[in-house]
Image (tube, rainbow, N blue to C red; front, top):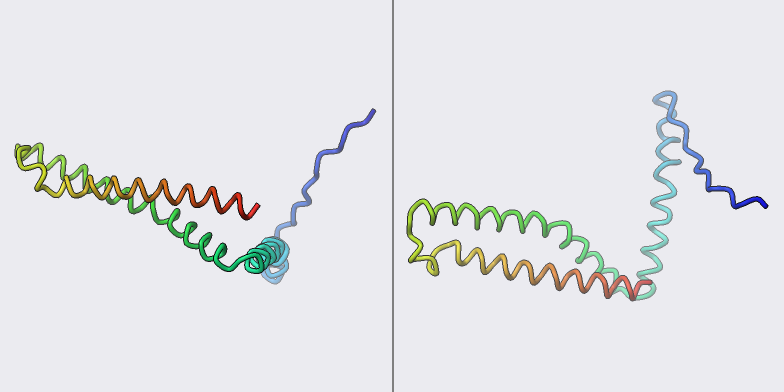
Length: 125
């Protein structure tokens, strides 16, 4: 009894010269952009709002780690300043307190976006 043969991916041969580069790029990237366009068309026909919402979610998920890192940097620098100055009694009026609030809001937004992403993935199939 013979089992199923594993899928053999046919690798595109690398270009041999500068004139062969357009063929190589067409072979490598052509299939991706063709499928990507087809998927965007399917989602557009299903519901335009899903495409816009998925685009916003993807943009937010790409930018959110940078925003989180900047907020965390501000919190850590502010805590270092509070500790070195010894002004712990004035904590609720300090920038650190406000940054901690922003960090809390940021974490809530990330969780909401993750839930929206899960819901959209279930809708999109």
